[in-house]
Image (cartoon, rainbow, N blue to C red; front, side):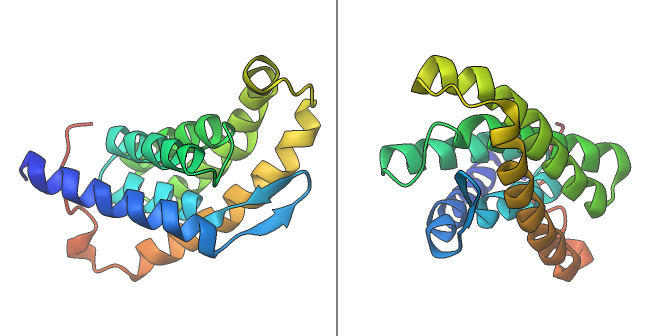
Amino acid sequence: MNRTRLIIVMAVFVAIGTMGSQLLWFPAGIAKAYPVQHAVNVVAAVVLGPIPAVGIAFVIGLLRVFLGLGTLLAFPGGMIGACLAGLFYKWTHRASFAAAGEVFGTGILGALFSVPYSHLLMGSSAGAMAFVPPFIVSSLSGAILGWLVVKKLQPSAIRLVPTKS
């Protein structure tokens, strides 16, 4: 697979994640749940691997912040979740583990990382329990959606772009 095709596939995932987040969201405690971002993380992790999935999550977060569609909290949860989704899939070759990696990475680790991150960069002093429930709700709903998408893909389409990551 050539680099151009990889970049094109990544751009499509970025477009889906950026626009889809604005089309499908719901309130979840102090935050909004954006399940499309998490679904993209799971599908990208399975199809492309952990490194491209993290890059996709970063660019989606960056676009959402620049467009005024999200906050700086899009970075820690999205990137950690994408990384763990990709690693869990790489180690097990099971989409359910990619979904679990997304939930653990975003819902637990991303939420915990967001506490000092939000204090330093956003001036917010919310505690961990303010972030964990909405992050889990958002990542769980998106991980289930992503897992369903992966299960519906043809087996030959699972690895569109073979990677060494």
